Image (cartoon, rainbow, N blue to C red; front, side, top):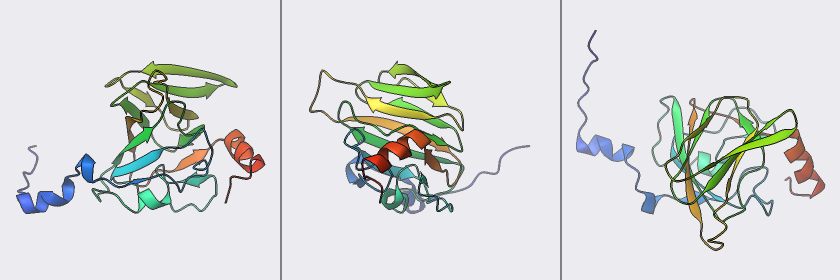
Length: 182
C-alpha cells in the first residue's frame, strides 16, 4: 500500500525548522543542575514535553524550562536536543523510560553506564553514535580536556512523546547531602 503524500507549503514548514543560532538554551530545571560537575546548557529542539509524574527525581530530560520551549513543537514519537558543556561536565547518572541515543557534534564525549555497581563507558568522537536502551543508568560527559575553556556540543535523541528522566538513587542522595535539591 502506498503512503499518502501530504502537501506542505513553505509557510507551513516554518514551524518545523530550527536554526541553531536562534535556539534558546537553559541551564536549570533538573535535580543536578546546581552540581558543579553537572553545569551544562540544554537546547530543546524537537518535542520534550514535561512528564506528568511529579516525583522530584523524575523530570523532562531537558528540565522544566527547556521542556516548555521546544523550537519545533511536535509530538511524533521522538525528541531531539543538544547539550553544550565544558570538559569534565555532564549530567549525573540517570535513566529514561525510553531509548536515548548520543551523537557528539564537536569534541570527545564519554558515554557511561552502570552494571553491577561497575561503571562502563565508550568514548565517542564527532558523529559516533552510542544508543542506550530504556532503563539503563547512564550519563555523558565532555572529555575534551585538551581544550579546557571550550564548550562542545552533544546531540541526543530520546524516544517517546513525553519521555521521563529519573536520576539514580545515588545521584539523588549526593544532591541531598550537598544541599542542592530544591
